[in-house]
Amino acid sequence: MSKKVFLGGTVNGSLWRNELIPELKIPYFNPVVLEWTDEAYQNELRERETCDFCLYVITPKMTGVYSIAEVIDDSNKRPQKTVFHFIVKDGENEFTPFQIKSLQAVGKMVDRNGGKWLQNFQEVINFLNKNV
Image (cartoon, rainbow, N blue to C red; front, side, top):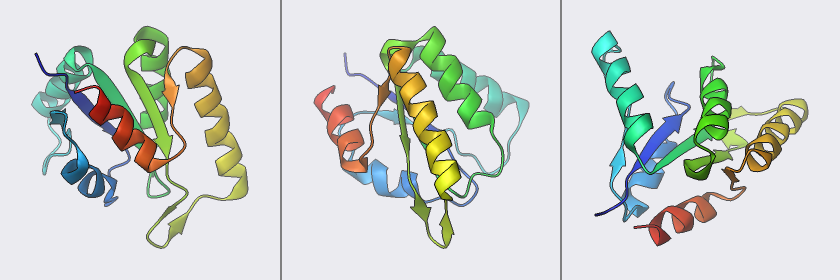
C-alpha cells in the first residue's frame, strides 16, 4: 500500500503547495479549501491521524500561529511521521532574523521530539518521494 502525506502549514496565499505537488510521487492530502467549514476541519483532523507523514511548511505569509502548534503537537504525539520545513522568503514577504531564530528553535524541538526538520525544500521532496 502506498504511503500518503498531509500537506499542513501556511495557507494565506502562499504557493509552496503549488511548487511541491507536481514534484511528489507520493499521494497527498491538501487541506486547503475554498470555504473553511466544520466538515473541512473534521476531514483535516482525520487526515492528520491517518496519513503516513504530516508535513508542515511555514512561510512568512503566515498570519496565525496554529500551524506551529500543530507541528509541535504532532511531533509529540506522532514524531515518526512529523516533517517540518520553513521558507525564509515567500514573494514579497520575508521572515526577520529574530523570526528565523525562533523557527530554527521550533525545528530543533521537532528533531528532539523524534520528528524531522528538513532545512532545504529539495530535501523535503526527496524525503517524501523515497518513502513512496
